[in-house]
Image (tube, rainbow, N blue to C red):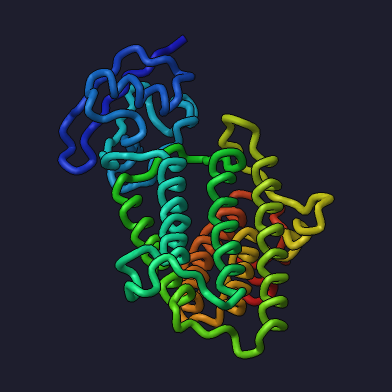
Length: 308
């Protein structure tokens, strides 16, 4: 059995960082990262990007050396991805913040509103309903992070946690300030509008959870394999017939329901910004599905059936 010699160069300077002798042909990029880590302890595998070309795409950890377009002396290029943090930690942090922050405004802790309103409660029942819905949403997200989601990538750059928390925490404070404000006025069409909004919100929350379960069941534990998601016996998943990322479709529906329920401008703005971001993600995922699977259903749109 022939063995490989592997040299790893700095992608920026082209300086040789590491030379590995007698590497097995069935070694994976993940295993090569571990070998590289032994000679450079400051670069643990999660912060390494190994490429065939200095400006090319990162190779996957599961890529096998002998299946790559390299000779018996393989040259790879290394880029430092920076300090990394686990997706689970990021999600737990960015979702716990809105839950706690919103409740602080709901209970009107001191120094938010005028002192005479400290620890008072709103006279409008929609304010209490909105708090329950908002709390339910983020408790659901936290539980899904712990028990449902299976991540294809274990980590993300540490800087992302500050960006993500600024977004989620900031919007939660902005929305909560106005919804729980002593001068808040209920929706113009009153109880009927609130009830319709609640139905939309709950319907979409159940739909979102159903999609997350369906996506989880596509990927066995510890696997990074990707499959085409199809509708299951659960009617909430039938939207897969028309949309590539129905989890985002339902998420959008939930926040439209919450906007209708509260009739609050900051909530509407949060919904709009979220829709724009989810559309970007959905289009990217849709493109990757089309690229990876030749038999991908042609009727599907990224996020909104027949529209977008």
